[in-house]
View 1 (cartoon, one colour):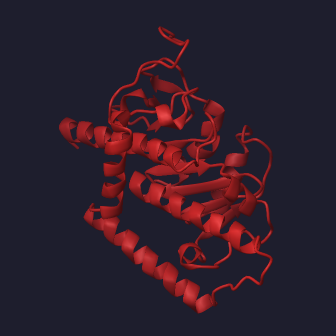
View 2 (cartoon, helix red, strand yellow):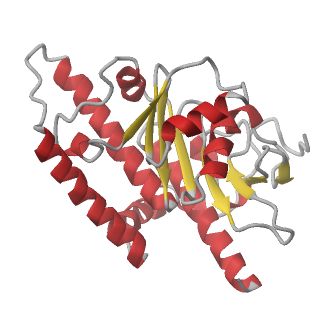
View 3 (cartoon, helix red, strand yellow):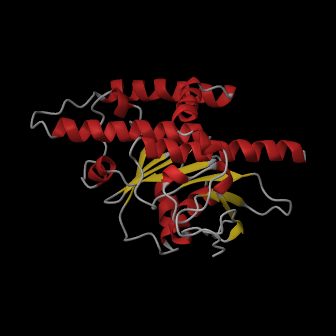
Length: 268
């Protein structure tokens, strides 16, 4: 790939990843300075694997395209515009998935109240409505082993995920993959809505009406067809609408950002 094309691709990925952080924040799906959204960059000149991650200590609402940190598969810093470093332990799950799933450009992990609630019940996500039907037969599960600091857990995460694109980390939260940043964000938003709807429906104390297997599978296939079309054509009207929303509400996401308070001039 010519250098110009690499530059363009890198800039595009940076912009989209910064947009992802801002959109997740706007939807109230962030968790202080924790959880991550990572994206794979084209390999470096020497073939080194490169990924983008948020600077440690910034809230999602503060992340910009130019503040993103470039790291390798071990979480070691290759480029750090703000000098804040990254939460290397938080990249444990992401590194495992990125290195095993070269078909995924983006990995998105959340701890939302609704997502954690659904992850905390044995039944997991139920096909109760059109939103959740999208994920019918497409969700992997991984049992909780404690805070993801143990590198040996990566093998089990990859094994449990298999070829799927959505994983419920039991008693922990949600993990979503995307062939693009746009796909990962849209899957995460729909998964969150599905979890919120499930919590609300079961909280009514009435009898849940789970969709028949055939109907849920049909709806999942319909959703998949639409996603495949977006990825094949490179045209995604919903993602473009999301970016226009950011242009109105957080126009600096695609640019640079100053250091957060009390960190001015920090290099560590």
